[in-house]
Image 1: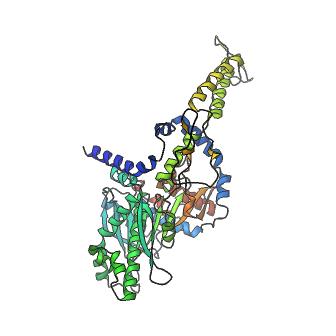
Image 2 (image 1 turned 180 degrees about the vertical axis):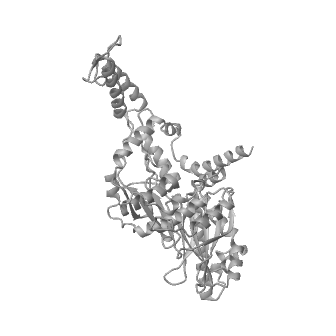
Image 3 (image 1 turned 90 degrees about the horizontal axis):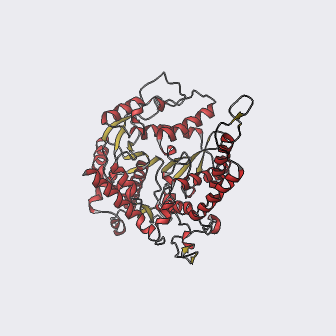
Length: 515
């Protein structure tokens, strides 16, 4: 019964997210979803392989600034912590934190986490169970901070998708209104309004509300002046962490604004809930390191977080590129794909191979390159021609010649709404296949690590760089920690040091905490 309810909740979330988008498509939506056939996906992947080659990737990153190798060390440390959030028990999390910073002179890595200058964290809170819009996470406090430091340092690590409850949050990808206050040139401040992932908004706000009293108590007991929160997350966790940081930093700004004015202005009160006043009295600043964060914010909101949010994206990772608009665009691309020539090529290739194997002589069966065929039939060129005529006719029925070319729409021209279009070819609508404009993008400063043909490279790219889904053979593996981010970091550092045995300390973590 519980599984049925969860499945129903996921279905409702998807319908809420995609309903408005699909309503703009023609009545015969079934034709679009038929394009998800294995054959179409096979040839679309082949086409994407030929287009988005390593040379294409190099060209797309040509004018983007490179990532410093020292930054990779820092990101790897954050990746270790994000992986730890997938542990199954509180004890595993506690042991993992202790193991990360335990003195380990045996480490062969020049970037060992045992360095005493690294922060050492003590577990404060851990919830390994997630609920819809209430992600699993843990909190830790820095043990080795200087007594002269006026800040209390808190670590929050938010888990990504691991349970059915997390899938409900993921499915709520509807772009809903979201607003944060920011300083203005006149010091009076203003607000940035945009769109954000509905499920992530609720998850991030939950994290803020959940620990409001705990953080206030810790600050009072510590005799510190402020709290600095480091948030780390992977996948869903990165999105929820980003919203939480935006909430905390906007509250911190409103608090400073109150202090400057020394007055509870009505404009500030408009942005403050009565049950949230205590949160504004806690001086908190937050910054985020996220891996594979979902398409989360509209462009202007994303740019507004560049000073405190870093989003790392591994090559073809599909989650940061996936929103309602990009999914519909992918369906449209699949619908427009004309793979007749490729299909005929493959059928003819198979027939020629049969002809070689079963007719006359086989070219691969003996030392002298030939062997007499013992089968009672032959396949000649006329037979192949007849079969290809049948194949051609069948493909014409499956893929009509009137299917619009992907290049029919002017380059760079997009629109939010899909026009009904004109009826041609027995009622087929042509203009409705115009692409939709993506609304949501990954947040903050985006770092893209990609395979450049000879190794791994990384550059800083704008959030709009991820405005379509890259259909690639590694698009799923690239999103995972073990087969994606950890492997990319490791290969990059091995190439940099020219040491095939280079290993991060993360390689010594228990595989049970891996995603």
